[in-house]
Image (cartoon, rainbow, N blue to C red; front, side):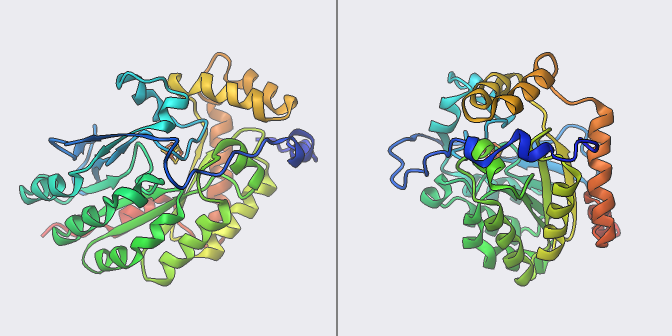
Length: 324
Ligand code: SF4
């Protein structure tokens, strides 16, 4: 995190230097859908603990939000696609997701553990408007009173707020909005088809107004583009103002499948100085030095604490129900 340069952002990232992404096509002509019948939906999380995060589920593979840094890009390689353009244009849709989930929950296999919905790819990406898989998934989790959390960068989630409210009445629910910067230049450059930052905060606000516990995954914090202490403070303050019950900070890492695409897009869209800094940082490694990561994480947590917002782990722990 740059704490010494008094003018790092304007110098590195002038607004005029970012090439705006084209708006998403409303008719999906740019997307090839691969509809699949899933045999199972729930995946066991390695190292799961009783009453902890035990399971994940993902109704979609691939994501039209097209974030250049997305770690889920790696998975498209295993489907026979490239991890660049194909990741955001070839979508795999588990069309029977809700029915399969209901069948699995009926066996009681999740016990008291949480289910994390949409850990790999965003389950409120554009395709959800067409396939509408989430209402059935939410109803299944609610009917079996399974605690769950989901994370999104999409304002489409607002369509289902009534279902989240219903779920929150009978089980533990936590909706995380993923937001690493308030700066529209960062959004346009790195997350071209996700909802704008202010729309994500509005979603958080709407969830809180509807009585749904909701927080912010402050991620990824992109080195040099979004890590200035003032920018982080403004972001945390905005999360607090919108009613976040918790925050979870994370600094950008690049998986092998995302790295080349990220740097290629950075070379095309970013000012040369910013591109060169990112290229130098991620040329031979996948993550920033641990000292940097700790510094950013501590900074965000300290600012959140000023608003009385607990860390994600502490928040989840505070919800733990006594074992009968
Ligand atoms: S919204 Fe999430 S899953 Fe989708 S491209 Fe962005 S980081 Fe990847």
